[in-house]
Length: 102
Ligand SMILES: [Zn+2]
Image (cartoon, rainbow, N blue to C red; front, side, top):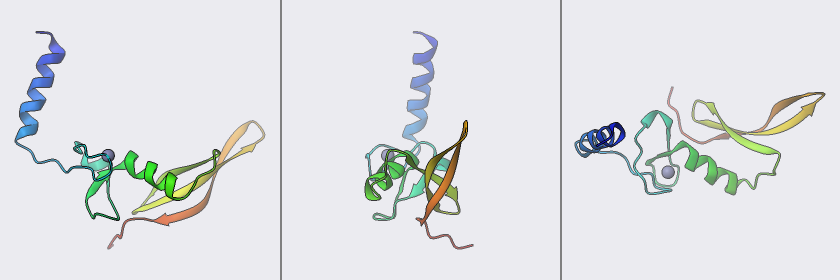
């Protein structure tokens, strides 16, 4: 048995004792809660990447646009703007995704 296999089986055993949330978008467990956001439609935790993919579809992003998490439950649609040699990111629209009670 090599080292990687040993490591994997250790994690598998560990995972069985823990109840992971299942991402409502891709139906896979969320191992890292820090990189998850509450899914608006289901109220469940979802992967960060899955949500961004969903938002990209929903807002019909242009090729030069992208979505980033800008904090406090908000996403921002940014446009890449060339300025001389450097590339600037301009936030075009903010999406309040998660309700945050601060
Ligand atoms: Zn997912």
